[in-house]
Length: 264
Image (tube, rainbow, N blue to C red; front, side, top):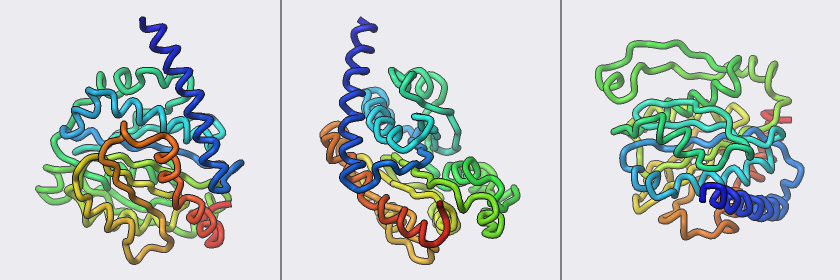
């Protein structure tokens, strides 16, 4: 039975890649390369989405889109809740039952949601020499809800020297609710606008996602580096619509980032 399920999943993945290819071609990004990351919420409220396979199906769909940009035909997986983690690389070879094997069995769902930590982790992952910052003790509440805080700023001279000829980074950020570190997250996304990172925020469920809407239109950024859309039920949105909405602003970002000298 496991073999049959795997075969069915592989056949479905082939179909997903065809749809993703059509979506990428439609927005004029055929041949565009990018490094792709997927950040997934592991707060307790996500439990039913993990248990019912919604997260696994979302991962498969995003992998199908991601491999259209990534030369290694893989994406990098990050998790965030109260803390943040880098899981590792996900490729076409090992997507089957990935969420159960690499996330559910190895990580506990956490009781609080922070965004800034994983956003810093992603920025440091791709642009380590351009990140300025040092660990500090932080307040009691900071320690309680997110560990130690990190000063976060971009050394633009280092960025230009090391990364301005690099390809963009596309981050798919999946969450079901707002966070507890809003002020710090605003600092991070403003600073990260000086890097070649595009953040595609996706809100799942019935929340209003007021903060993600705010991030989508945040003032004070060097470049518009984020987009947001809400999806009440990920399983009900068609593959075509999901891909189209996920790529709605990425082409505009690439053009502007290139004109600003942030990417090759």
